[in-house]
Length: 324
Image (cartoon, rainbow, N blue to C red):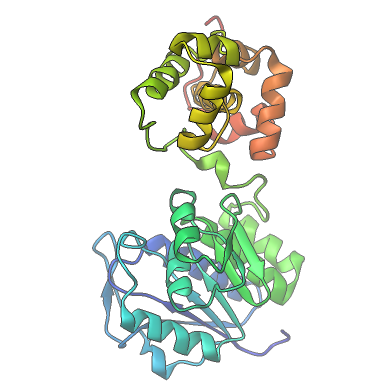
């Protein structure tokens, strides 16, 4: 990069997430205080000021047609993916992307890039809650739901909200190397590189319930008593069906196996128990795992974290009683 000014344009619009805007902006601003030379501008499709999702007015510097950035970022909003992306926002995105050297989205800003055709043939990510919807809308893209951010060539996408800070740090590191970026991260009291994917932040099994009453009885049984004997044979006996038929029900309605469903229920309970401050050994027993090691393997597979590392991030301030 040298000493040349690097122009960063952030596209905003009514309903935009304020943290999607100010999080990355603070990273670039802190980098400037340490010797970088980023010039940031806020742009909207028409140049008019906008109102954020929490009602704070955002003063806009220019219209999309008046800006030629080196780096172009589009922030996210709660209105996507609930509604189609507006035509003026799509056109503004295409205009800015066509002039920029690299293009990035924060959180659900990926839906804007996708609507503009900028994710076709590329890997991408977004907030874990809506990653599946992005995959449906952008069938020509390969969505990676657990990534904090994804780079595919000169196109970058990031997970939800604060992941915009992770992405901005990655962009600064690309421009100025790890030493300056490490100082930026320290000044902002954030990790230079967050360990684990965004699955560590997701809520427990927020999928639709099974359609059939019979399968719903089985999932309710597992949820009510994760530590019970939920072998395939035992679960099939509860419905008086064959193990093969029960396996087919799980596959058709939940796209998983009975064993994996039981394991994920136990995994979600384990996260909740660790959040509350229970020890790892207590958690393994209360959540229904055969032993600590089996629980550790699931955490390593799902989060790339140990139970202890997960607990350091998310346990409550008030630890559970050690005697419980």
